[in-house]
Amino acid sequence: MNLPESIGAPLDAMKKKLPRIRLRKLTRSEVLMMILSFALALLVWTYAAQTVSPDITQNLKNLPVNVDLTGSRAESYGLSLLLSDEDKDALDHLRVACDIKGSRTAIGGLSGSDVEVYVDFDSALNRIGEQELPLKVRSLTKKLRTDSLDCSLTPDHITLNMDRFEKQTVRVTNALCTKITSADDETMILTDEISIEPSTVEITGPSTRLSEIDHIQVVVDAEEKLNQTKTYTNITNYQFLDSSGNVVKGDAVSAQGAVFSVQIPVKYSRVLPLTISLKTPPAGFDSDWLLEHIRLNGDCKLPLGNDDGSTKHLEIAIETRDPALKDNLDELETYELKDQIPLSSLTIGGASLERTVQLEDGFTDGSNIGSVMISLDDTGLTSRTFWIKNSDIQLMNGSAAYKYSLQVPTGNTAITLIGTEEQLDLIEAEDLAASINLFNISAPSEGTSPQPFTVTLPDTVSRVWVSPLPRVNITVSLAG
Image 1 (spheres, rainbow, N blue to C red):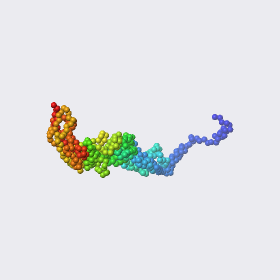
Image 2 (image 1 turned 120 degrees about the vertical axis):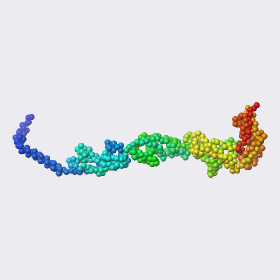
Image 3 (image 1 turned 30 degrees about the vertical axis):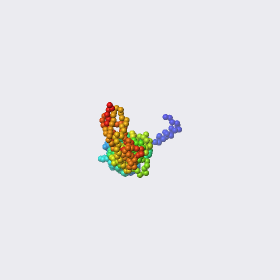
């Protein structure tokens, strides 16, 4: 490369002044001296490193703790951490101080990001429950081996609750419905008949906690006044209960498919006084007067509309689950027994009559009365016997195919009248008329059988009746 003359001249002059070093002029002794000098410098540097830069302690503070069982001996034993929400929060805020000793060159630039504090889950584990486990440190950088760390931790251990997670099937038997009430006094929620689906679920959790759980209680959060049966769906709120009904903490316990439906049934009920009526009383008879003498189950009077509030009535709770029948129930003021009372069954000092309580379809007897005993309060009543000539008994409405006759046409038949003494005094035997309606005779066939006959009383009395029903023997033969 050619340079301009103004530049080249000075360079040539410089080259002439620089001395030339020629290695080939070094003697053997000079080479040996250079080697000895290098070795001496190395020794001095080593001494200085050991005296001027001794071991130091690196203080690392506020180090978080890694709590991870993955791949540990604890995991191989099937153990897991049992942590409450408070425990999890405490672990998140747990910080450890670490003092690491070492040479300045090795740890002088060490920071908290170069190491990790962790729970040693490979230590001796021999039970479930609370255990004290050591905290250890490992290096996160290749420049520093974990096994070469000389460190101390504050704190150096941690207490954790460990358990073995298992599965079990539990019953769903309760529903908590504190905000659901009946719409009115006649609507009743059937708490004993509340149904829940599904009836069982599989739960997973620590074995010690599962051993406490006996069943699940579903919590219905809805607030409502029910006037008919209703089903609530997609319920996800529930509680674990022990065998005594106490709530068990559900920490770390999960329920598979825990979405429930709850049906809350209702029924309608009214408490009404029982009453009864007379069977086909004769025209002009004072039925209300006689019903005041009727007693149900010993001492209960009939509700006749003239009570002063102190009268004891026999009451029945009539119930239905059919909303369509609720209006019918609301219209009732009393409930009348279906079986009516024949006048001829009411006698002074006679046995009580039993009548079964029969309700219409769709209604039930919530009082479980079953049957009622009917008796006659004979206060102010008396009885009197009259005789009727058999020849005066009229036979009516007989079949033309048969011939009817009294077995003893010339005899007399006794009848008993019951009523007030004042009205019985108004009756004479001649005032009584007797007849047999042959149309109602049972199984008209040849032979003789007793048949009841009807006695007609005079119009002057309204508080007298015949009891028991009188009978005479009727002979039936083919008309020839």
